[in-house]
Image (cartoon, rainbow, N blue to C red; front, side, top):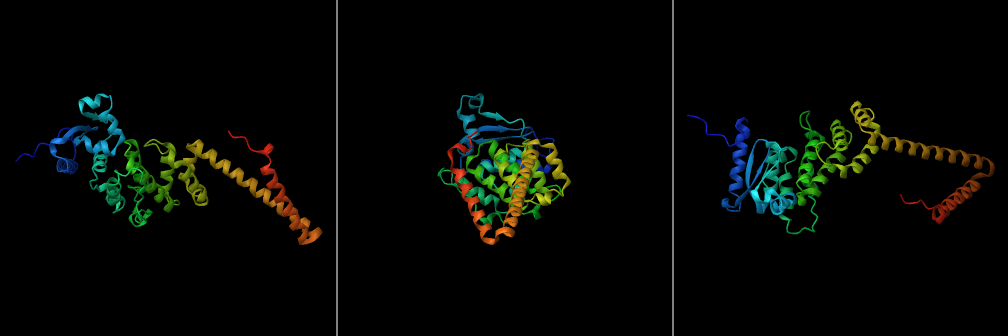
Length: 301
C-alpha cells in the first residue's frame, strides 16, 4: 500500500517532520474557533498553515498589521515568510495558539504553562505578568549540551517573539534570557550568548547589551581564561572599547586610592590620627561643595 500523500511543500522532509506538521494542522482545525474560520494562510520556506486571522491578530501586532492594513496580504489572505523554515514556522504557530511544543519542553518543563498564563492575560494589557520563580528553576547550565545551548535557544525564542511583535510574551521572553544568563555567567555557553547578542545576526538583541555587559564585568576574572571570550572581544569593537574604558577607569580609581592612602600615612606620621581625620573630613567637604557648584556641573551631551 502506498504511503499517504505528504502535505504540499514538505514532500522532501522526514517522516517525523511530516507527522509533526499534520498534527499541528489538526490541532489548528480543532481549535475553539470553527474550522471554516481558517481564513488566512502563513507560509515559509517549505511549508504552510491555514490559520484563524482572529487568533493571530489578537496576539501579534505584526499579523494584525498584515491582515488589516493596506497591504497585498490583506486582500490575498496570505503572507509568505521566505526566511522562516519549517521548524521556526511550527514554533511560531504553536506560540500564537498556545499549543505545547517540544521546543519549550526541552528548555524547561513549565514553559508552556507560563505562555498560557500570559496569553490568557491579553485582555488585560496593562498587567505585567512575570512567571513565578518555581516555573523557571530548571533553567540552568546542566540542561546544555554541545548541540543545544539553552541560552542560544532562549535567544531564538525571544527573537521570534520580538520579530512578530507577540506583545504579551516580549517581557517574559526577555526575562527568561536574563535569568539564564545570571545563573550561567561563567559557562562556555554564556560566551556564545555574548557573541550572539553583540552580532545581532539572529535577532535584534539591543535590549540585552547593557545587562550582558554588566555580567561580563562581574565575571571577567573567569572569562579572561576562556580563549573564545577573547575571540568575541577581538571581533566586536564595541565590546572591546567598553572593556578598555572600564579597565582605565578602574585603574584611575585604584591609583587615586593608593595616592590618598600614601598621603594619609604621611600625615599620620606627622600629626597622628586626629590630623588624618580632619584632613579626610575636609577633603570630603570640598568634594561635596564642588559637586554642587553650578560652574562645575557636567554639560549634558
